Length: 266
Image (cartoon, rainbow, N blue to C red; front, top):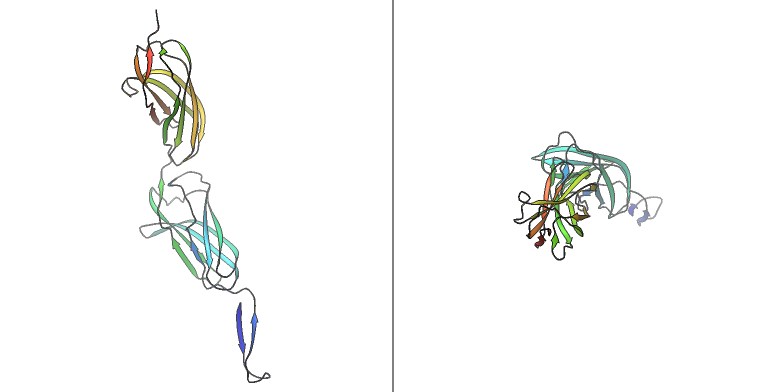
């Protein structure tokens, strides 16, 4: 709401006040990245589907309607690298905010591995530019898949006989802590090991499957043991799961308890 005062002829000496309601020009629109949540690690040289919400505040008491340019930059050591630009007409009520979603499909060629701050800037119709830097840094890294695996359950009851069939199953949870999806052939081999190492272990079963696990996501898989290796001698063993991802990185999970295996009767 804007007030104007007119004093003079043909009105009396007293002032005459009238009010005009409308849309005014802004005196700067303040961007904020407070509501933006980004992955801990963003891969270089990869296709991305990231959306960064920038909140834009109109601190005046009047509504505004004007074309506004919003930009995102990567910032490191005083250098700003353009990341995304959006120009659109915004309508924002007085003392209110509007959200502009910035789409990022690929990192710029000038970006290299390292830690960066994000900077958001807005330029209004009067060419006033305000900016805001993120409170935390983001990490740019080479594309990678990074599995961590653990046994969810291992229903091995009693002693298992070498060379015999079994209905025992191992259930594993696999989490991708990398920055790109894991897609494709994944190999899971179960070993019986007396000292918790694959090197001294005896293979029990191997399964190859096609898995898709997005960054930060977890997938549960069930591995039937089917048949115990005939080469196992009587003793107690840890069960080890070795997982090989599509990029041939290996990770292992070790059972918390030992399982008894015994030599087949002759």
